[in-house]
Length: 86
Image (cartoon, rainbow, N blue to C red; front, top):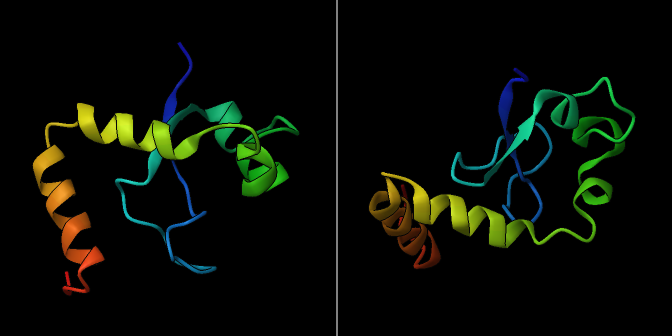
């Protein structure tokens, strides 16, 4: 069985280089699609190229809605939108 990894999506997260986005901004990928060794893996080809044509925001929202921590995540997102420190 192939392993599944949480791929953080930096696009639109406000996280800069060397910073990890929030854990709720993830999409599940198999390890080959996430880190390689495939040439078309997220880390090999770059995030913008990898996610081009994929509605990653919809995928992130679906994972949040399915999460047992949904209420906490939505509250943290609302606080952040209002400028409340975490």
